[in-house]
Amino acid sequence: MPDTQRLPIAHLRVDGRDVRLKYADVVAVRRDGGDLDWELVAYGLDPDEQFAPGPYRIDADVLDGPTVSGDAILVRSINGSHVFRGAGELE
Image (cartoon, rainbow, N blue to C red):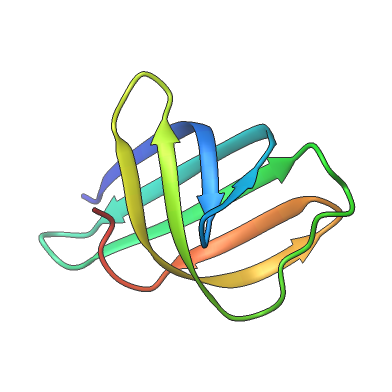
């Protein structure tokens, strides 16, 4: 059975750039002791904010928790909605 965590995000930085949020969370899944898979979904307040395809450094302050960080690849960025797929461990 996979170990899954959903972490609500209070504050997000993408390559050091603050993203003003409506809502964001990180979902992390570890399957049977294997590597960690994670994804960040963020809905920004600015519908015109977009990210270009490519790799990014994600720093996310968990609501009532620590900051989690990791390298990620942009999946899509449309009308202020952003999806990043983890490209390594989540620290």
